[in-house]
Length: 277
Length: 277
Image (tube, rainbow over all chains, first blue to last red; front, top):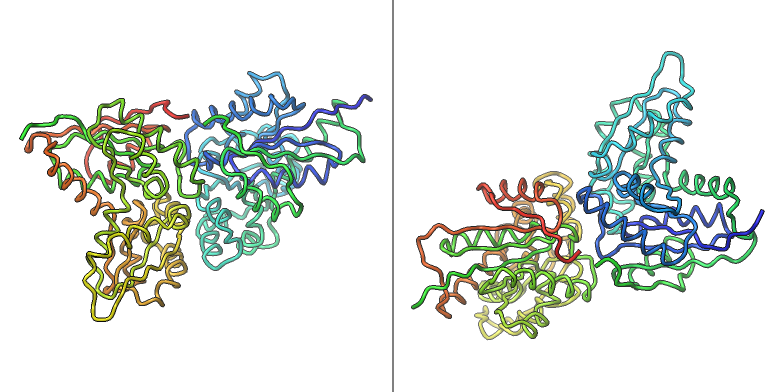
């Protein structure tokens, strides 16, 4: 098997995609990463389909300038509405976060009652429902059960995470308010369908109870990327010291600060670029 | 006095500037208005100075294509960090929302203890403090009092308004949490330093109490625009039926819906433009 030294490209609307980076570093420590965070135009989740498709194309073009071997759309909103266009138009393979999360949810559920939370644009695209139904062959049901999906958009979760209110009374109340409709649906699996949401895991677990499995799409996506790279034989040399490079469309300093606290390591290379704006 | 038929141009990061439009229609019913809402890149309040200056220049250039006689930067963040650049570079007169709000706050206060709330970028720019001190000649103090300004950024207010949670328990808790530090400062005047905030007025009043005067920068700004137009003799014919035209950088439909409910009238002309993105 030959060695492919090209980096993996990841883009997100902002910092959320770092949850995927964290998992990639754990699962594929030898791979170089080029990350683009569109911090000047964040958030994507309240914007229209057309606009998010346009932004996602620009982000992919930027990553391609950095000669990536694989593009990960680490933003659920982008993955929901732009993945088909990206796959159709670009030669580089593109992985989104929806299919891996949907697959893991189907594998995890026994009752078939699966909840999905995400941004307004993600939820109204019904992307998770479609992927869950595509994967229903993998479902190992309890007797007499079939798959049923319950969705809820949670537009305030991203601003709460960006504000750093990860564990506060207000946040718990917002979580309770958004999830109350899902709470009555007797789901056994809940997809955290936005890369920001794993940061609210403890509050979500408190509301939903311990019996509900939370599917973190960042973990699922990193696993899918690893499987893809292994299957194609395009891995970099394992055991090497990988380089992480970050690019953002707004100020580098803010991203660096939040990113370092989030990834628990120094980010030596964060560069602001003019791209797209 | 001649009649100047050119429209007034207004821009904002999104829908917040409609609070200024509403007041303009009330105070200057004969004036045509061209509004630009940068809904594809909203919000501005968490983005860096440079980026907001760039966006504000692009928004002004767009309004100039529509031959406006006056530009109103109806966004507090833009007014805080970009107004000097706009005034320096463009021939068209530009009015921001900071100076009018600061002036009204100084005129209203007796104790001289003035509070300011706004987005992170507005508050860290200290634009209100500077304008308040510039206007201190207008201060009619109670005996022995001088001016002192207390500021607080409230990053979650914009998402709460965008989510439509104008009066809810969660919103009240967020308001209480943000304003607790101001509550102890014994202020008699509070500037709502973001065009979204007037929509949360009733909750803010509940927390701050009836004795604190709330300065709505939208009202102050429309008044400043009226005075400017009258002083320069560039008013349109009064009593005519004015035309309001709206342009946005994301989907027109969403803006139309929110805008109609907010302005209480049909918006027949909302057009999406590619500008800036």
